[in-house]
Amino acid sequence: MVRAGGQVPRPGPAPPVGWTGPRPRRPLEHALTATTDLALPAAVLWDMDGTIVDTEPYWIAAEHELVESHGGRWSHEQALQLVGSPLLGSARLLQEAGVAMPAEEIVERLIDRVVAGIQRHMPWRPGARELLAALAGAGVPCALVTMSYRRLVKVVLAGAGDVFLAVVAGDDVTHGKPHPEAYLAAADLIGVPIEDCVAIEDSPTGIAAALASGARTLGVESAVPVPRTPGLSRARSLEQVTLRTIARIHGGAVLDLS
Image 1 (cartoon, rainbow, N blue to C red):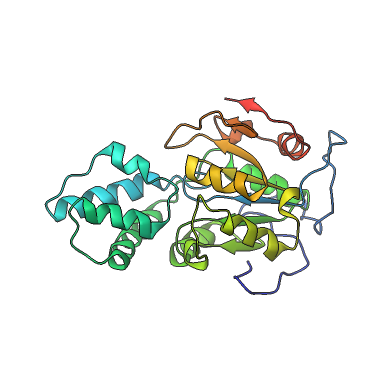
Image 2: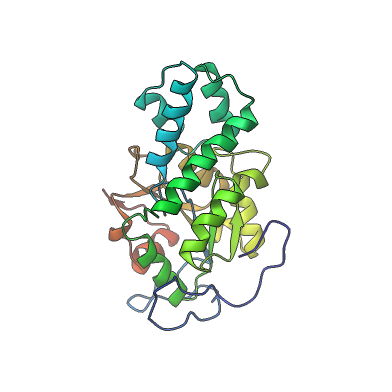
């Protein structure tokens, strides 16, 4: 894992915990899949919440608990509007709903609750670990690009193994999603052009950030629907996504697997 401003190691990422296939090769420039002459991307940039791990129910439960403890009201529809958003921006909306706490304190309280949930049970999204393993085996580096803060990211990474060559968290950037800063920073950490990357996202906010960065983008449905958007590939689940799928998206195809 690489922290912002750190040096990027040369070897490719290690396989996920439990991976019993071949050790990953060093990152290859335009590596080829085993079943097609289509080139794989220079890197795959992953969102975390709702894409790799299904933490959105933890976030939503934490929001309800906090608002209601302050005598306010919070609906499921309001909670869904925050999916993929920067945490400080979400905290300000919770203040408007009646939470009489500083925004920074709200964020820390929410993170506490989500960390506790993950420590009880790591809710992997279907197909996430398998695709991470396939990319590792093909020597394609991956980066994590999330609006969650690093102390939450550390808990997820502890259960995922050393599969990410770079991490950009919400407290690393000045501008959160839908601004493209986080995706541009991830590509820069790995040392590859953003146009040679494929991003995987689950929320309209994150999808907007990935598309704005110039990365080829795949939207995978989770807590909220993924609307049709020009240039966006879509899938119902990562279980539908293979190395060939990633190679085709990288090559310019806009796929609808939903």
